Image 1 (cartoon, rainbow, N blue to C red):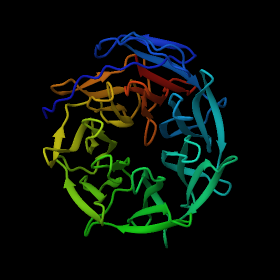
Image 2 (image 1 turned 180 degrees about the vertical axis):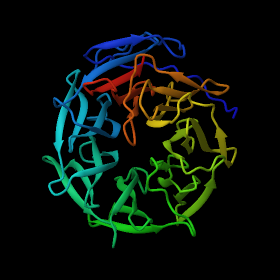
Image 3 (image 1 turned 180 degrees about the horizontal axis):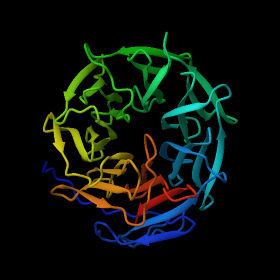
Length: 421
């Protein structure tokens, strides 16, 4: 898979807290320091750094990853990373406030216990130009719940259940603009207890609706596998978002439920290694330039190997990456990094083993995909995700910095962060 991808060279802002600097797994050229209004001076060293972010409660019973996202308080502010987690049945967010990391409690749905996470997306308030996070989880009674800012407080909303069934497994969530510049609409995808793909969104009156997207004929969707996800595609800056949903069947074949601008369709992409053990590792949309069309890159794990499906040379193409060196490839975040406004974006896939251990990065050297071990990290193999990553953009240069959040395997369990700079 010899695609032209320039090597990643990224920096990250150093936030207040204990920082461990480790030798670079893949060397990069240092960049000049940039000013940052939220996080202090930017490092010029080329190395991975590790920070201990702690835990919000003592004697933490368990933690579940919901997702990470970058948010701006306005066009003149620097983006900040936010990491959402379910901890002891409640939603918590870790984010930088006034230059230091801080935990904030978001509470829990008032009726039933949180069973699993669906995802987190961001919205730009058209009247305020402030980005807000929308968080989606589902509960033991099969209801989908959302948590977001209602104008005065962070509130929980019961989105309900798919018609005649309940939420059985998560797929993903995206914020969709039906026209450039329009207010984005949340699209949430789940697999119902009936085995169908279901889609929930707000209609023109602000009410949540459910639509049965069905299932390919003769196919049983895999409800126990780690999810692949949902992503937006855009053919050009003047075109609307085209949401694409990727799911696995019980034979390990990959299916895409995509919107082409007129209708929804199911597309079968098969797999070079069909297996019941196949599971989602990550999904991201990447661009070759600021005005280029975005293309999806879906990553599937089979035991310790990663399989990649992407749109390349006007065709869907599978590629088999080398072995990760682990028995399992558990999702820890998939992002598109970038060196500047006019450069190509490149996907980075972060993962850990089923039983935990050091994070691993699958990245493109310019000639091949390789694996690197993130020295100084020791992640817990949480189900279904041991962490998540966000590409933090610099509003002056367009450079996208990788921030990877994960839960430690060492006790007491705590949230950790590794970033390159």
